[in-house]
Length: 447
Image 1 (cartoon, rainbow, N blue to C red):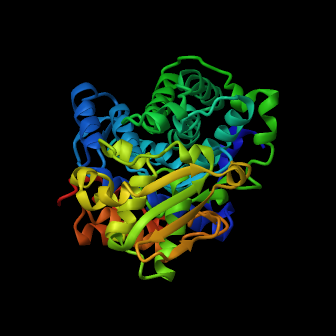
Image 2 (image 1 turned 135 degrees about the vertical axis):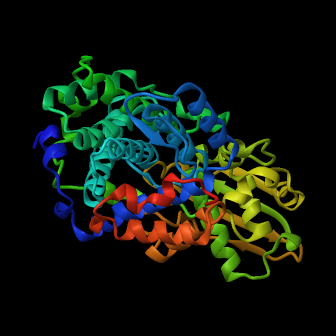
């Protein structure tokens, strides 16, 4: 099946029931993360940027959980940065990245713009577009990482998913579609991901860039700008990553994060949470020292005394300390005043993070950590080598995702808005208007 035919003809009913559930779970996860992130420094900075520099145009969208009308391109920048600013969104193993934090905010912005122009988007149509965006964005990521030696941020490939999903909603013909793909690939910044891991900034995984580039490519191609071909899609070397499109679903390999920190820190937090559940005597006051044994990339996170939210989320020691000190790690524990909180920092100073050769040898096929806790009483506690909760092999349940949504979205949204959004997403395929059903997403978060 050609990529164009897949994007044009795909129907939600073609998905197996469990894949339909993963798609809606992914949407709920991203929306909850965006709701929890909208008031943080990164989001507010990008919202200000969008208002000042992208105030108008033919396609106008509302900023998520804010309601201000801006160009769809500005909404892409702001929405992608917002989804990326709280490192809790779902991801994907073989692409070593994420599609949803680019595709969801970009396609929500485009759907809102089309709705404003009098083109209704049903809930089923939105889900179909999002599934196309996930499936093609993830495959583009696998194609890129398999044909290029550099570890690229997700914004280096996820614009392809935006183009594929957006082309479906906009009804682009095949020629225009191919040019949009080429424009998106050519202009995508193949961002050096390890630089941000080692020197955290607001740029994160480049989802704002991916959302902007994808939306920009759609609009440019629509106006007649040429750009084909997209090599990660059309080159012969890329063929194996697209051959089974429509018969196997990459979105099935999604993982979900319980906590808003780097994927590489999640196994250690999982190990610690299980130790704490098994040994209630573990608490901040009783711990003499903690040793985390992990793979080299995870060891690079360190992060004992972060100076801002970006460093706190691309860290291992700090969020692990927050879990011990406060019993949870949500948006509040990795932003704002928590960054300098004495109770968290006191535990963080007692954490040692080292590389373990046996665990490094199993990376990247397996992402694992081991935690050893020495209590002041002299008792020694050790976890097994542990994979992260939320991996496909040990998934978060629907109830887990609901609780996470409530924790994250509840930071900024009123209870009724949380309830309406969660209910709308769970029943979205039955909605006559996706934008009307998701109304709380397009109004100020405090209403």
